Length: 182
Image 1 (cartoon, rainbow, N blue to C red):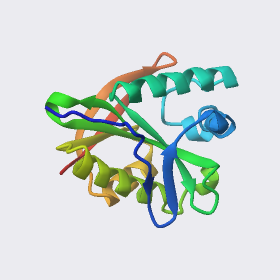
Image 2: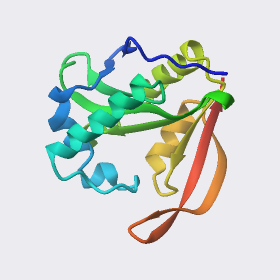
Image 3: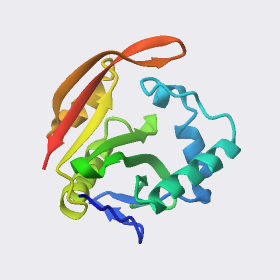
Image 4: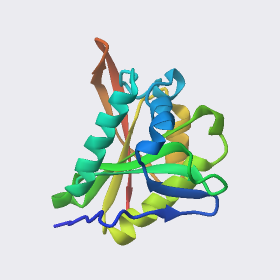
């Protein structure tokens, strides 16, 4: 059975990016990501309303990491590593199935620059080589064409289409599941 271990925190680097632990110092940027209408458009989550919500979220993230159930990286540019511009996570880890779900958010001003793709490629490498995952999945709203495109460009394939699988604000939405094998 898979036995992930996120201690010490596994910082990752790419040519342009640093994927690092998120701290209280990132509250402002994390609040933006979790409250911005454009970022949340296809995620089906209510926007955060306060820094207190961010702090509670960070506690949840830290608890999950300490239990080796999930990990969330802050994405920062190497030229400014103290300021996150997005997040990348592995969560819904299924130890018995050697599988995890990939999730990500990026500030709109950085969309279309290949940042998400670069971060995904590094997390794929970490997930398969270090964690020894057998497969990864990502769930995408059917209208989120940019997210689907970045997943396809990093070797994911469409694995399933779930009709009216998700309910948000009393409206049902479909979900496309993309996956990638080691």
